[in-house]
Image: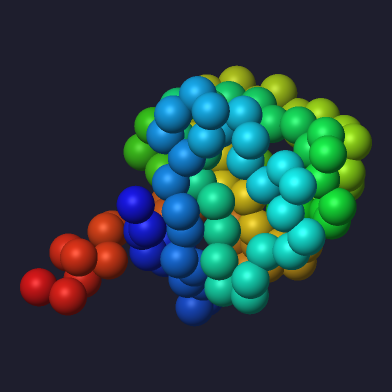
Length: 116
């Protein structure tokens, strides 16, 4: 499923949802790049790794209400931070999360809902 994620200052991306164990495990592994304006949303996830990845990513840690808890850049072959309260993680191209501020909510809606 693809969703639209919006925030302040014109932030918006289309994200694929990784909502199964296998989808979360594989994540962006073995991908050569992430298209501009695209992201991966790991649902029911509290920590990430970048093993087998070929590029750095911005990682946004979200709580149960999609509030930004932390954002950071994680390089290949590293572990992301352990952030208390994380329920979802948004993975973006390096630099794409620069507009996001902690303690600000992101709004997630399905593309189908937006067309109605």
